[in-house]
Image (tube, rainbow, N blue to C red):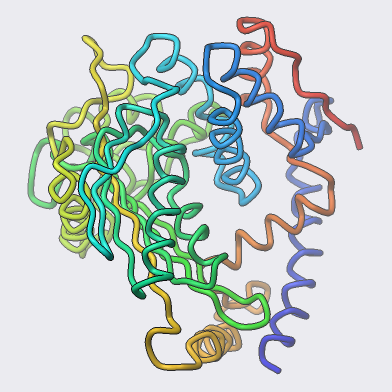
Length: 385
């Protein structure tokens, strides 16, 4: 009953969000263009194939970026395509490498990504973790030799869609200044968890252990917007609101504001599961994207699948009961009902479905046009409202 009540609230939120989208749209012609998901996926696939990626691997990669954009996580979608293309063209990534298992037990495995596409490594590892969880109840797979694999939650959701609890961790380039320190030593080191409720309900959490990801600052720079205080520091160690200066300094603050030691601790927990457990690069040793001289990323990642059926029965019911209790709490602002992790992304996906695709900001559409010309790939065929 509570879930049905939430669905009613969800529909009203969609109507409200759609009105806000209309108000916030740029008045220029480009802002009216809608990119169908199939067209975005086709464009990304063809861009990667044009630089030598085998089509099956390009398809996995393209699906990864589209999944991020369709959930409203534009920092990890089409916004990043230019970086990936450059990595492949510069041979910093062996885009056609196939992951292999180097060590294995009933519930665990160590995988070498052989410097392949992160999305391909990620899918391979979570598929393996799911297979182990289906046999033993739990599957944990750690990988080394990987690259940036897109948005973290897609791999946790891969397990959730099979009825399992999924978790995923990755380390990243060192951009976090740990609490009390002057220089960077850890990455944004995101983690995610996805769990299935009942009647299609779910919990999906994905967050960096820094106050924000670099991708969000990149978006602010492209859109000529200031960033909030509490996100990043400048070279003088002061909080910075200019995204260009913040991107140059690459000094992000830990998650947690006055409790930032917790963000630092979470980043170290992720590093234990990734760089240390998998014997990949870790902490200050991880390369920066675009650094000179260039080197392989050798990121560490871990993928966990848990079959709730191997534990107490009724997990999905209890999860939905808890989530719906939180959703029905009286909101501080009546215009903004209480939501749980995963709800905003579901809302965004519903709007994308209803409008027939994604309305990208002009900054990203300009990158699409640039790549189309550089790689001789047919540009995205937009629809217009």
